[in-house]
Amino acid sequence: MITHKQFDNGFRYIEIENNHAKAKIALQGAHLFHYKVKDKSSLLWLSKAAYFEEGKAIRGGIPVCFPWFGKNKDNPALPQHGFARTQLWSVILEEEKDDGTTHIRLQLKPNTHTLAQWDYLFDVNLDITIGQVLSIALSVTNTDTKPFEISTALHTYFSVSDIDTVSIKGLDGRVYYNALDEKNHIQKGDIFIHEEVDRVYYDPSERITLLDGDAKVKLHQEGSNSLVVWNPWIEKSKQMNDMTEDGYRSMVCIETSNAREDSRVLKPNESHVLKAIMQRV
Ligand code: BG6
Image (cartoon, rainbow, N blue to C red; front, side):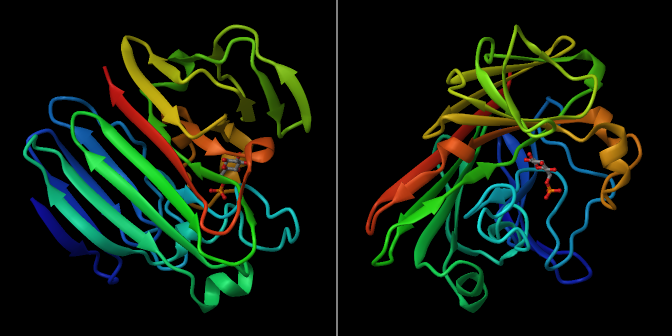
């Protein structure tokens, strides 16, 4: 079943319930903020202090970062992670499939607000499939007459039982850029998180595993050669109004991306698809 709903303040979202799972997608940002397979715990983390308000990004779920990831290189005064996560998207396809999965396609088109920040014409779709497995694909086409560069992310907040018990496999030996000292390093072994972590890993293996005690999440990415790992830890969380004091203990972001050196240049009529497929196993 697909139901269009809204909060008391008019903030709109779609609720999906099928034989496999339940999910919620805000029209602002095409932002999946809830996904739970029946008989399993929620895959995605959502801050207890998240805003569901026009113009504010939701802290949790899967924010879509486009057309730039992080700070805008040319104008750092522009909003971090681009405008896609605070723009209203249109739902252009709702499909309940024979295999019991639900497919939703949302679209973002250029408008006066996007053109004021980024003077390019584009066609952007986000395809979300809700089943035993969650699949999310960001397709970008350059509909302008000049090339443009994009850096993007499916900024996925995974829910974990306790950050102390978490490890991430699939990045051993990879070069990563550490945003905290602004230097490149090489990962040795699995990732453990016992402090603030803000890194872009290059050339990740296609399959990443998040271990959380006995629980396991598998993440597979396509069209991506970079992966962001982020946890704000204690001090940074205090500076964020939409994080509770201990929120950082129950989340880790592992973001399928085209970040930094993995940014993509699209010529007119060229397209690029960034895709993440994930599930609790
Ligand atoms: C991560 C970045 O992807 O997103 C961090 O690497 C940033 O530097 C974090 O702090 C959260 O960003 P925001 O804009 O949602 O607070």
